[in-house]
Every structure is written in structure tokens, then in C-alpha cells.
Length: 346
Image (spheres, one colour):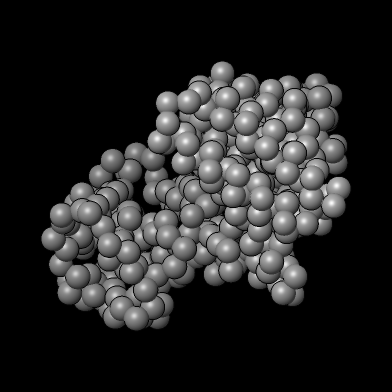
């Protein structure tokens, strides 16, 4: 079941006995949690709503709550958070879980309880008996990656509810500054709506003034400066990031990651991979893949590889020498630009 279908049925009060909210998009998971909570009257929530973290609490405690009758109400709502035992992941948690009891509950859930497993993972381990039972007994709601089109729809719907419009260039800049992340975008909307309270319109100036660029977006700008041989702009932006208390090693690591992604996208796109298959194969947000595809069209694989290897060398020097990290980045830029110009001149 998709999120919109689930929200519609939940808001009608048509509830399942067990839900699995699977995925890493917190904004959508929070929307579902809020909708479920609305089915419990506010005066009953203290006694009839429970939340348990499986990394610190035995599942038996959550089951005791789930199997209890509602206290002066019709329903009990129980959240089971981080059920890592449904995945192939190994947890450092030293908690003894009675999974046989959980299996029995899945097979025979309490009619007056809504049990919600909040699973912030990309997938569950389909080989496990618990998971096989859940797929038969529970409503599975996917809150993993959201496409750019879906994200735009969420934004437009939220703004339309307040009768506010957003200019096309403003919306694009909002995506750029938040890496197309739904949760980050929705978190920025309230202040943009306040800005547009009188005009009922969000323009580019509002986004530029109110939405701070993420570190990833700043690094994306830095990547473009590197590849276009804009040495002064690249060095100035690097200095600005360091002045903003960003650690040089962290900046370099994100730069390396970005160039690694560009190389992967360049190679796989040549092999015929589509944007969707690239995102799935590389396990990267579709919007990042879209930007990477736009970037690699303008640069050859040799330049991307040279930049990656140069930054790798810079990282080693940062970790093994006492040289100033900002100076090391300046040296990287000078060497990269000189090498590429020499290659181009041949």
C-alpha cells in the first residue's frame, strides 16, 4: 500500500491490526504516525498509546502492552520502533527478544490493538519466518525513496492548501538547496509561507534569502568549480566552508563521494542504465542521480578520474601530515588544472 492510500484509510478510521511502516523517509513516516494517533482521543492517549524501542527494550514488554485491553477506550495503539530483528542487519543492542511470542502475536493479533512496526530500513529480510508472516497479516506501507515528481506534488499540495503559489525557478532552487530531500523541503515551507503571507507567492529571492544551502549542495557547487577550472571560486568556497566550522576532512570526504558518484554514473550511463535504474543500483536519491547525469554530460571520464585521484591523495596528506588542509586543497586545484590543461594541449 502506498502512503496516500494508507493515509486515506487511516483517516477514515478503517484500521488494520498490524502495520509495517518500512523506509527511510522520516517525513512520510511521521505523517502516518500522526494520522494513526488521531484515532485515539487525546484524553485517552496517556493510557492507550505506547512506544517501545527494540534496541533498548525487550519485545515482550511491547507485547504485554499490545495484549492489554484498552483503558476506558476502544483501541490501544502500540509502536514498535527499530525492529532490527526483521532485517539482515546486526545490532549492537544487548536485548533478549522473545521472537517466538512475537510470531504468535503476528498470527493472532489482539483485535482492539493497532500494532505499528516502525522500520527505518530499506528492506526486511524476506527469508525470515516473522517477515513472511507479516507480509500475510500486516499492511505494509513503503516510505522509502520518493521520486522528484512525487516530492513536487507534496510541495504543491501543501502550498495550495494555504492558497500560496511558488515560482518555477524558486521551486527549482528549493530543490537544489535541499538535495531534493522531501523532509528537508517540507521543513523549509513554514518560513517560506510566512514570507508569502501577504503576496501569496514564493519567489526566487525568498528561497535564496531564507533557505540555507546544505553542505552537500555547497560541495556540489565546489565540484562544478573544480571541473570548470575556476580555481579562485573553488578556493574561496572551500575557505568559506572551513570558516563556517566544517571540518576539512569532512569536506574532502563529501567531495570524494561526489566524484565517485559522477564516475559511477558516467560509466553506467554509457552502459545503458536509465536514471531510475542508476538510482536503484547505486542506492542514491533519484534527484542526486539527475544532477549527476546533467553534470557528466559536460566532462569526460578522464577528468572525473583525475579529480577523484587528486582528492584521494589530498585526503592521505590530510591524515598523515601536519600541512594546512586549506593549503593542501589549493595545491590540489593548481595541480589538477595544470595537468588537465597539459592533457588538452597535446
